[in-house]
Image (cartoon, rainbow, N blue to C red; front, side, top):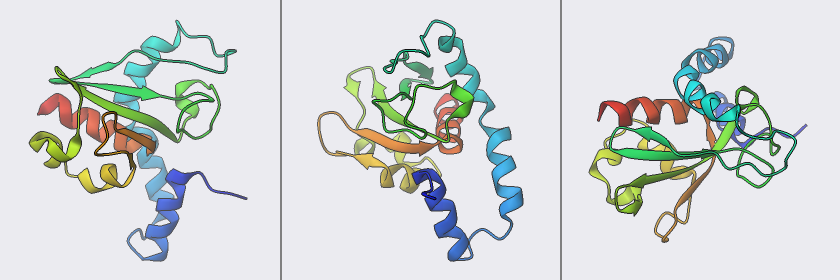
Amino acid sequence: MELAPCYQRIVYDLLRNEIKYIRCYAPLIKIKIMKIVTELKKQEASSDLNNDYRMMKRIKAGNYTMSVQGSTTHYCSPIQTEPIENYDCMELALFNKKGWLHITRSSVVKNFPRYNELLERADGVNSGAPVFGYVPMDLLDDLYVYLNGA
């Protein structure tokens, strides 16, 4: 059985003894994701779950917007078009008023407590269109909450 990329990190942390109680870890994720799931579900009603491709609108997060995507064509798990609560990980892109946000150049994002975890998931971090693949839902939620308070 192959693990979703977002769970591979949990197993890696377990093996390094950084997580001691896996039974406590997973339920916390489900509790924490409610804020971003609530925002994403507002769009879900207007999307077609029978279509392979789905593109959701950006979510406002403070002075930024987050593009959080999940469908057969995105870096997500499962790689299917599903109801939002079924995803373990989703694809992310960040934008400011000027366009694509480059997190290595943003002092606000660099101060995000989980910045290094986000950076690990970056694809083309120095390109014109940086995208973050297989971002765990708890990390997305933490970023959403952080940006709303920044």
